[in-house]
Length: 186
View 1: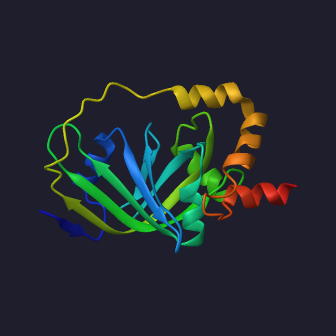
View 2: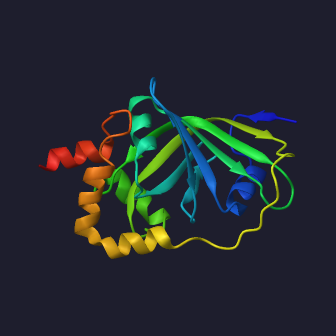
């Protein structure tokens, strides 16, 4: 049933591209484990052992904080339509903030959706597939545009303040790269 690979294979890449959402799991050395669902076309495969996603502003910033403290990161893709499959990418993650040299190299790979806040990169060490036989079938109806409209309506200045208030420190008190960057600007 489950198979382990050292890198993303061409059929894995095709499967990932077909999925409409993915999940990101992270954990610091102590505190809460975080699992975040991600939608929109924000995931990129940079090489067979390197991936990245454009992270949008949200009510928390747990992944960013946790991988700064302990870089463990897992991605999970699930087939909700067609042939059942679960694919996990295990690796180490790090954050790339806007206005850095690395951001300038990576940003052109994405459509910079309203409310973008950072790019999360992961070096993939293990790729694992499993059957997904018990995952129910769901039909994709479309992307929700609520977050994107919210970001546009908030405006750049208010988004910066929101990130300062809501995205600077994790629920376990870990300073995020956004929080550290905003503190340096003051």
